Length: 157
Image (cartoon, rainbow, N blue to C red; front, top):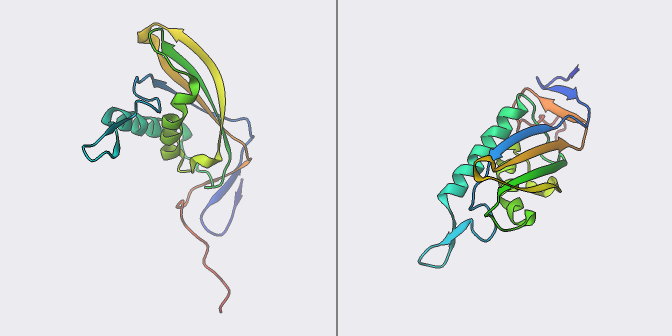
């Protein structure tokens, strides 16, 4: 562990230390069902989807602990889909909602995520869930200090 002058601690962790989260299945998470349309024709995110994504963000934050990542950190996201036997659809339809929730939790743009399809298994409805594994693809993390804290410039111009 190294300390630099800005009250931030640089911790180097192995690449293979993933963040694991399990979330309940929600029927409206697919791309085709996550919006309703206002009377003016604008798409509006359904309240149940918004609440689920916020819950996913909180679960990701809790699983991260004190770890914080750089905004340009690359991540591999692996999801095992355990969907009810009556549900239709494919894995790709769920990725947008999953990425949006994870993006809120990690505070990293979802363009830095690489999806990896895991299992897609039909189970009874009471066992339906998403098992999410988030693996940082870089080795350096920042802990402590404020996320958006910038070093003061020493040059005068």
